Amino acid sequence: MWAARIAHLVKAHEAGWVEAAAVRNMFEQACQVAGRAIQTGADVWAAYRKFEEVTDCEQSTYEFIAFVERQLAIPMVGSEQVMEELERHAAAEQSSTGRPPAYLHRVRKLHAEVLSRRYAREQYETMVATATAPAEVEKRWLKYLNFERRS
Image 1 (cartoon, rainbow, N blue to C red):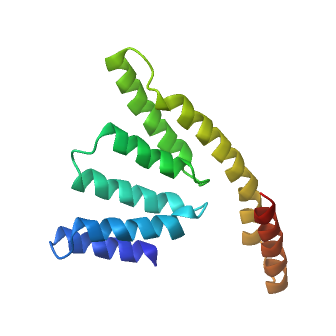
Image 2: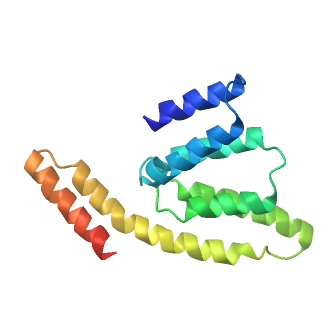
């Protein structure tokens, strides 16, 4: 559902029917809902970043880092690629300044913590996905819910 809504609004913006602010608002909503899904959340964030790159060519390094840090704070599949991109960005920044960027240590630490949380949740995601009988699905979801309440 969110993928279709995103595609529709981006095309409407490209046609000049919708302002960029309306598309950003929709992306923010999508990131709060679908962007938190462990398996598919990265797709929402990638679409948002692509939109921003096309729309806001003058995006500052600070805005880029803040955006990436928001994404990396959520446990999801694909965060390693986002971190690799940030590492490349930091390496380019370091080559021009001669020192590592101040944000790099903080974001590395955040990503390591989030990866740990993701790995803990992935076992529950798999457990729910492999259940076949409705009663078993419900039982596994309840286990997952109890885990979330404790963490």
